[in-house]
Amino acid sequence: MTILKAEDSHRLAKLLKEASHVVFFGGAGVSTESGIPDFRGNGGLYSTDGEDNAYYLSRQCLVREPEKFYEFYKRSMLYPNARPNGAHTALAELEKMGIIKAVMTQNIDGLHTDAGSKNVIELHGSSAKHYCMRCGKVFPKEAVTEAAGVPICDDCGGLIRPKVTLYGEALDERELAKAEYHTNAADLMIAAGSSLTVYPAAAFVKYFRGILVIINYSETDCDSMAELLYRDSVAKVLTETLRIIKENEA
Image 1: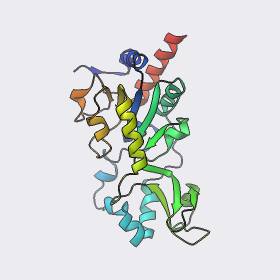
Image 2: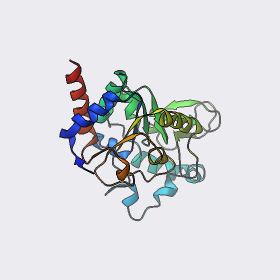
Image 3: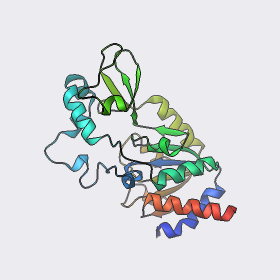
């Protein structure tokens, strides 16, 4: 398998133009260039010693110790100043051109939507969405970021929670169903910025039977399945691919 760089993006551009149903599967590496850390990389949440991060991000902690949950959640999971990078904007433009049919993401940052992508499948939910656990009232992210402590519903006094999958919870079945549909319909999948080790989400890549393209700095369990394998920035590869496609259409 030849390892490719962003300057080899003409090969990806050709595959994208020939495919009829392209889906994108992205992980934390898609958003690192927006200033959001890869939680499993050096310095990320799961490399931090002395803290039980899994517990702080669990439903159990949210219900039993909401003060601890929100102190950790606000400090480690919310990045209000993060903006879409070149990967997000390129995917949104490729969708407008009819090339990308769906974006499946493990990220909860909402940056794909901010960039303009319409068909975004948020497998782990979104930190941009919150709701009251008692009455179901929907709240924007500001209800959490601007709250002095634990955010409380102004209608019923219930606890406001993020619409994300916490430890101890199952993924949203509606999002899983959409991901399954597009995976089955796709003839080409780009998997980017993910170690492809977090299940069940990573199963959509592992069991995909069409043309697979992987963009990731480190090795993944699915590298041997890839038609093209890029060890480069997701933003650089997708931005260059978009440029080539546009240039050829001019």
